[in-house]
Structure formats: C-alpha cells, structure tokens
Amino acid sequence: MTRVSRLVDVVVIGGGVIGSAAAWRLAARGRTVVLLEQFEQGHHRGASHGTSRIYRQAYDGQFYTALAARTLPLWRRLEETTGSRVLELTGAVDHGLPTAVHAKAKALYQLGIAHSVLTPAEAQRRWHGIRFDTTVLHHPDAGRLHADRSVTALQQAAAQAGADVRHTTPVRTVRASDRGVEIVLDTEVITARHVVVAAGAWTRTVLGGLTGGTAPHLPALRTTQEQPAHFVPFTDAQWPSFVHHRGAELDGEGIYGLGSVDGIKIGEHGTGPHVEPDSRSFVADPDGVRRLVDYARTWLPGVDAESARVDTCLYTTTPDSNFVVDRAGAVTVAAGFSGHGFKFAPAIGELVADLADGTATSPEPFRFGTRQPAVAS
Image (tube, rainbow, N blue to C red; front, side):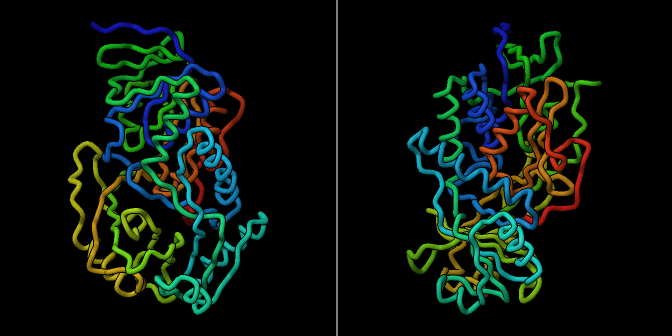
C-alpha cells in the first residue's frame, strides 16, 4: 500500500556530491529536506565515488576561476562541521601548450590568486615524478579531494542540519501537483513545495514524468564511461594535482592527474564511449588503457608504468561543458557536470538553495536555454 507523506519544503533527488551538497545547504537554512539516493551508500555506479578528485582554481576565464576560489572556504566549513578531512592542498600545475597555460595564469592574476609560471627545468627540480612540457603554471591553493569522504561528509552535515537522508530509495515518478511536486516511491508519495533533481546520468529519466510547462528544457546531456588508472609511485613524495594540455610536445589527448591513497591517478578528459547508465559494461577499453600506460612511461618517471589499475566512472556532459543549474517553476535541475564539477559542489549547493528559495537567478552560462562556447577545464 502506498502512503502519502506530509508536505516538505524540498526533496533532493540524487545522493552524489552535488545533490548531497544541495541538501546540506538547504537544511542549513532551516528547510525541511528529504535527500533520496537510488543506490546504497558508497556505491560505484555513478560519478562521485573513489578516493580522489582534483581541486584547483585555474580555468581559462574568471567565471569558473572565481567559483572555484569561492568553494575553498565552503569545503573548510564542511570539515569543521563534520570533523572529517576531505581536502588536502598539495598545489596544482598546468603544463603544455603555452597559450592554454597563459590563459589560466591570466585569470588567476586578474582575481589576485597566488600563482607562478615556471620553466620545465624549474618544475622538474621541485616535482621529480613528472616530466614537464614547455610552460608550467603553479598555483598553491589547489590539491585533491577524497571523493567518498566528501560525499559522506556532505550527507552527514545535511543530516546534522535536519535533513532526512535515504539510500536505496529509487524514485519512480516525479509529477506536478496543486501543492508543488509529488515524488512517487515504491511505498510512499512525498509531496514537496520544490524538487531538486541532481541525478547525474539519470536526470532525464527522473524528469520523464513531468509534462508541459512543468518540464525544464534541458540541453543535450551525453553520458560516457571514462576510465582513469592508478599507478604505484616509486616514492612517497607529495604530488601536485596536474593537467597536461595537448599541443606543444604532447600528441593526442590532454591528461589530468593527482595523487591519492590508491596511487597516482591519471585519465583522459571525456574520451570514453557513450553509454546508458543502467546497462554499461564497467569494462575498460583496452586502447584507452594502453594510452594511459604509454603516457605514464613517457611523462611520469615517478611511477611504475606497468602497475596500472583501472577504474570506470560516468561523465554526463553538455555540448559546451558548462553546467546546468537552473529553475523552472517548482523544479531546479543541477546536471551536466562534465567531469569537472566535483570541486564546485558546495558552491553549487549554495546556488541550488538560492534558486529553490527564489532569492537568485541562475548565472547565464548555467541556464537551460543558454549555451556558451566550450569550457577549457
């Protein structure tokens, strides 16, 4: 028998990093919040699992650079709230094509963020495990987030603020009602004044029950299966997070990397095959693995290139790599984080809370109907 629950202020659908951050920031404002995640706690089916994500502030323009800088104190607030350490500042380096590196240095300079431009020889003396290409940008207020601990801490903070956090609770239908939105579960219908959909690759599926004027007009969302690899380092020396931009001496795809408790992680950005999230294989593409191993042999003298351990995860990407964070009526959508959204989660949570409260409008790059040129991430 399906029962109807009391009216709540906000239901957040999606217990990944973005949905968990939104639940925290909404509950911290005194809203009655229910967070629904379809899978078990700590699952590996989406985009928010594992031990590492890059935190960095260097982007081509001021918009994302400023947003990343604004996120740093929010991550620290989360640590203070929960007593969990999630962010380690190791510094970050971009290297490779000079035009790509200098565009990021310009944005950091314009916003007064500490940074320096180094020669490859200067960088090599400092970070022996990496062979550097052409031009190197270093900024110290960057590093790595522990992904699993971050999601757990966000959900803990949401619960401490009064949110009802539920796992293994799939949403069957979302439909408009005269009191806002009805969220249909297996044994319950929750009525909310507002719903936040932050369901990653499942976003369109969740929104499928909404029709007419209640359905947000989303841009195309493409889901791919990506496959980073971890390599055993030869020493315990601290590694910066790094991005190697294609061009200059690097043929093929650009590479990102960072240290983690599982080794030195590297990956290509958004090169995996298109998949459906409920039927993907979880099997890595051998050609992609070979490219990562070849890269490690050439550019990472500080790792054992034969020690690759491969994982898979999901990217859900918009055509221009800008996020979708916007409101239509009683529905706010946060989606399309395109493989570079994890670092921004607390700030996106704040924006989602503002949108749900009706106290802000979405920045132009994040709006449903506005798609800007591709972001260099």
